Each structure stands twice: as C-alpha cells, then as structure tokens.
Image (cartoon, rainbow, N blue to C red; front, side):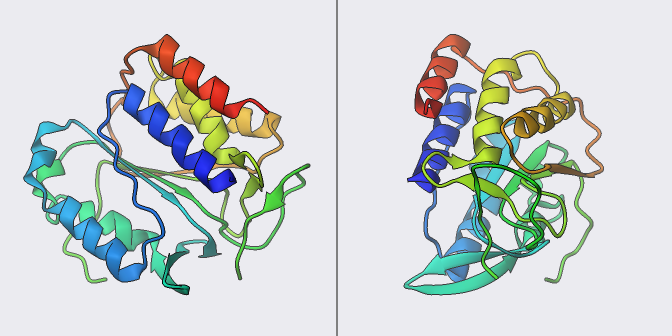
Length: 221
C-alpha cells in the first residue's frame, strides 16, 4: 500500500508540474538497464528543458539498490543510472539540469524516528557527470524511514514541499525546506549531492491549486 501511494503521489506531483511522467515498476536489472538505454538515446529528449529520475527501491549499501523481477533480486549502483546521462553519453540532455532522487536505505543505522518502519534489506564511462543534482532519502550508512500504509517519509515530504513551494522556490531552497519537513514528520535526514550543478533551477508547475489539493487528499491519514 505504501509503495503504491508513493508512486501515485509522485505521478500527480510531476504531471501537474508539467512533466511527461512514465512509471516503471518491478523491473529486474536487465530491464532497468534496457529502459535507461532507451531513454538515453531517445531524440524526444531534445524537446525538454530538464530531466528527473526517481528511484524507489530497497538499499544494499550507501550507493547500491536492488531491482526485482521473477522473484529474484539483483543490485545496481546509483552511477549505473547517472552515468547514462553524462554529456557524452546523452547528447540530447547536454547542458540541461538532470535531477536524480533515490529513495532507499543506505545502511542499517537507524535514526531516532517514531512510528515508522526502517525499509532495509541486508561501468565504464567516458566523462564525469555534470549538471546533475541528486537527493537521497537518508545520509550515508543510514536506513530510510517509511510508513507501512502511507509510503515513505521522503516521498510524502517531497510531495508536500513541492506542491506548496515549487512554483516560486529554487531547488536548493526546496531541499532545505524538504529537510525541515522530513524532520517535522519524524523522518530521516535527506542528503544532497551536486555534480557541477551550476544552474538556478525552478520548477514551473501549472494548476498549482489543483495538484496541491489532489496531493493533500492522497496524503491524508
């Protein structure tokens, strides 16, 4: 129930912010890499000004997460995702903001949070990534918190903060608000990682009142 709620809330949020949203669920490692390659080489990316990739999974360690397919679990590294979109690997997104959000445990150390479950289950590249901003649900070595019924604290906080502030707040300031919101919700500490992300990046959501209302309804306990 919680994982499904996360996907629904994110789809509502980013669709109402003007993004073309595609959901891919329960992919194994091969399917995930194939989909990343398909996205990387899609000339339609020329039409877009930014790219957002959100990964919801279980973590192996601070930089690896599990994929799932046919009852088997395989792991991927976060750079297996990000390095598909370096300037030389994906010319259609060269110089454009690329934002990655990873929601998985990065270790088994638990923060002192209440009423949540800790969601933990024990490449060759041609250039360094640029114009990339990555947000993690927890800091290195720590597990990420989730509510069994309503989804992860990270996603709930993102949907609330972005719905209220994305129309007039730069993304680094959104991150600061996200940290405060997660703390108030009893969540873990989010981490931000920048690879030469030089841009002042703003989302420009449409129909703000409508998508904020939809998300609020979906987040109500």
